[in-house]
Amino acid sequence: MESVNFKAAFVTNTSVLTKKNEVRKAAILKVDKKSADDIAVLTDVAKKWAQTNGIAGILLSILEKGFRLSNKKNIYILTKQEDSFEKLSPEGILGIVGVSFLRDVCNIDYIQTNHQYEYKNTEREYKSIGRALFDYVKSNAVKRKICLDSPNSSVGFYEKCGCRVVHKDENLTSMEYNPKFKKH
Image 1: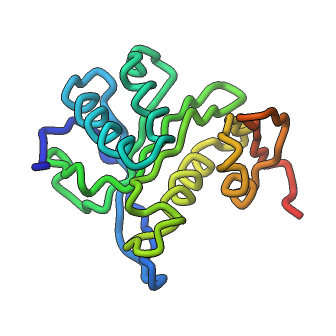
Image 2: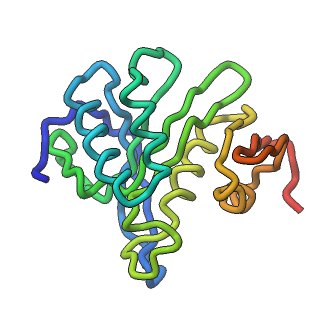
């Protein structure tokens, strides 16, 4: 896939770890929800990821149902690309987070990593992509509680990020991270 015209705005520099625990530069971008090109690229990426990971179907479903219509919801991309973001390479997208920053709470709709860098992939070049996205949200939640619904298979990841279980059923677990909680 070649680079595309992307309207996403640069938010901040960050870093990710390689498999050998080396620090690599990365960037967080905020997707322009009104840009048909931005949404089309994310939809294409989600379709590609969904072929190898069923969880990516959640992202695809959200994008296809008009995620961009909500003013409170934002999409952030973690990319290994360091500059020239207007020509973003879809292969450079490490992960995506959908989040709503509300007055007293921050809702994470999803955190999705590129299947090539998932924890279970022992050949992955990068690691801790989901953690980098969660940490970005946490740093911007500023005293707000973070709430999310997680597939049961991802509960361990969110617990490592400091979240606690609020409610659990057969398929889904409601969790929250509250900066007032002390992790034991």
